[in-house]
Every structure is written in C-alpha cells, then in structure tokens.
Image 1 (tube, rainbow, N blue to C red):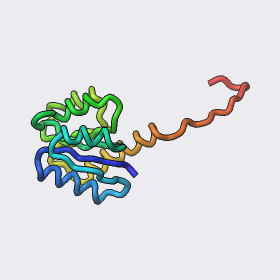
Image 2: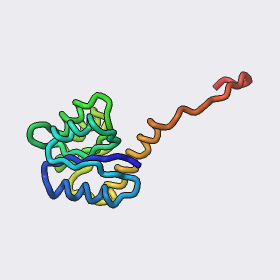
Image 3: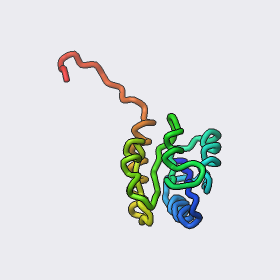
Amino acid sequence: MINVIAVDDEPLALQLVTGYIEKTPGLKLLGKFENPLEAAGFLSALDVDLVFIDIQMPDLSGIEFTRSMLKGPKVIFTTAYEKYALEGFKLDVVDYLLKPFSYEEFLTAVHKAERLIKLETAPPEKVEANNEFLF
C-alpha cells in the first residue's frame, strides 16, 4: 500500500485528485490539504510515500515545498502551467500532470511512482561469488 497526500489550493482540483486516489487500488489517502504549510507539518508526523501537489499556491509554491523536503516522499506535480516542467525535472519529481488530466494519465504517473518506490524499498539482491567469470 502506498501512503498518499494531495495538496492543491483549488477545491475542485483537490477533489478530482483525491477522487482518483480513492478509487485506485494500492493507494491510501492519508490527507488532503489546501495549504502546503499544513501538509509540511503532516509530512513530519506520518510516513507518506507519495505527494500530489499543485505548483502555484499562496504562501508556498509546490516547487518550494518540494525543494524543502530533503529526503522525503516521491512527488507528482499537478498544474495548469507547462512552464514549470523543467524545474520539475531538476527536482527529480516522478511526473508532471497538466490540468485537466484524465484518470488514465493519473494511473500512468502512479505506476511510475510504484516502480520507483519498489526499487528503493526492495532489499538488495544477494549476489553469489563466482570466481570463474568477470563481468
């Protein structure tokens, strides 16, 4: 199960994202926030794996929010603006969903996040020594 929060200052956009999260098997919505400052406090208290966050918000942008997390959950940007895609790439976000986005686009982003989370949490493979080969 992937623990998720959603952050967006637009109530309709937040409702769309949380609706998608709630109907997707394997995702557990831990919280939804219209204010990124409240979400930041929540992150320090609970184990969150994935954050869906809008970019343009008052007080703290999604970019500033993501930059402030040293080693935190995976991030998927949800925004109406294409111009921040490069910044998202620099911040190593999982995906960049352009509003309005479909459930299919949402699922594609979630599957990317699932693969990355599994890679990071999987125990290292045990490698048997074989002195006959050099790779």
